[in-house]
Length: 93
Figure 1 (spheres, one colour):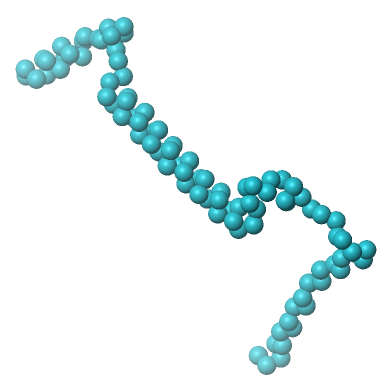
Figure 2 (spheres, helix red, strand yellow):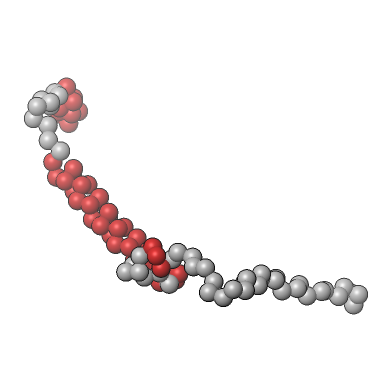
């Protein structure tokens, strides 16, 4: 019964609001969030570099490298024609 009496005595006392501090648990959570943010940022930069490599855009080229240019010839470009779909013969079934 002494454990229950001690628990009841501790539960009745409330800490002074002026002396409450976050402690090591708050510091640990803050550091863990900072470390996770760092690694997420690094991973995002790596993925963005892969996307730039996939599209052939170089960071030094700037926006003028991706701007569309007019054709140099006087003839218009030929429109793309989709390839015809192969026909399926169902008569053998």
